Image 1: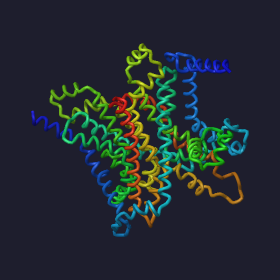
Image 2: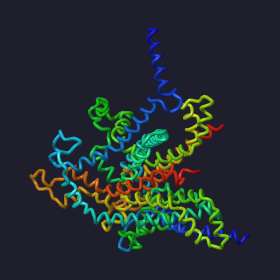
Image 3: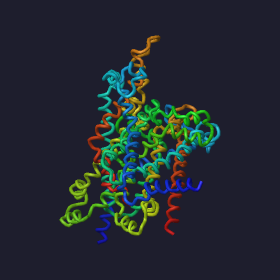
Length: 286
Length: 316
């Protein structure tokens, strides 16, 4: 019996082994190596790569000398704080709408999922350049003009950003809609019947039963949204890292440091948002 | 004053009843609201596509004419001829398929194997591996990019398909974690009975995997392949760095559309119109770069939209 178990043990490892090998070669080692590089000054010579230990030099450079990086991080964080909740709420609303008994549900689902298929960096960039991603003919409205006249204020800035990028923000919601929809369709219809008999309105039902049971899916979508939003190729920080990678005076070492800073920022954003969600969830149960 | 507030209250309760108080979702207003929202948002989603389509058929006269808005005066295909020349459409299309289909296949295959291993076997360290698989999803590609770049450079596979294919074959491709998760969930949901019967008949684990488990997993295979295909197709950041000038894809061609255009048709001084790049041509280029994906999507959309719940990606 023990041998049989041992046998299964080894077979299981064999099945997973391609991933383990790949992980070591293509992820774990590069991860450590780029951490190593981030503390070095890297020069590419004809004999290969020369590195010189500079302690936290690259990191200091990022926070003190390289002003554009911090600016970009700041706008990235601001835009993410605005966009991610919008994407989550919006995709939840769409999923709730599609979960009703509507005709042409398939057609609507096809439309709402379309952006996932075509949203590559160059296409979005082309669309933004053409100004198609704003709300159609928004310029004619007085509110836009008054916002545009003084874009300094905090809320004005947010509103302007929203107006200019609304379609792109909404375009990020394709996968999230499907995940919510799948979760909604799996919900037990009997709970709904029972709550209805007890006199709960649709409104109460949504807040007291539907939403709490969706919390795990909200967490999943939160992670998915933050990650895809952060690694999208139009992200200015990513462009900045790439630019520094091929610059002579900064090079691989500095670019590695930047990418590690960025990684830690993403990880912190994920930890904070997921932590907030799960804390709230625990409170609901007690 | 009294009557005014009463009036207001009455209206308030009336509207409230119409919107919220209605039990069930069969009220006319509720239906109108739902369809209104769906159609409105659907339009917002389709608007950029419509715009692209319309503008790509506009001749220069139509573009300059402020009266021509949504319907071009003539069916003008000149933009597509130009864009086709600039992007070298058919050979680029073939190259794009080459660098997307093969990694997608490799990634799907390895995700099936790994997902099966995680779902069906218990072994030491399985939990750790599972956590690591999920963790790879949140590591931004930029962090591993430079070491991989140096590594590929030493292997001399920069600018060749291997730069995409090799990580994909070992489960470290684009979003590999998601595909492993899809197969993991799928195999866990499938009853083991058939496999156990085959095992009693003396079939080995690998034979069982190939003859019983894999054919069952067809829905998961299709959905993984399609998603993988689309994501590799739309990947331009890594493609630009790994492939350099050696290989190109349609999105990459679109990225340098303006530069290529100006090289092919140098702007003649003082001569306006004629050869100048206009938004019609650019839109035609954009349409060309997404057209193959759109066709694939409309043929297979059933798999995309239904596959997500069928493959059980949302299961705990």
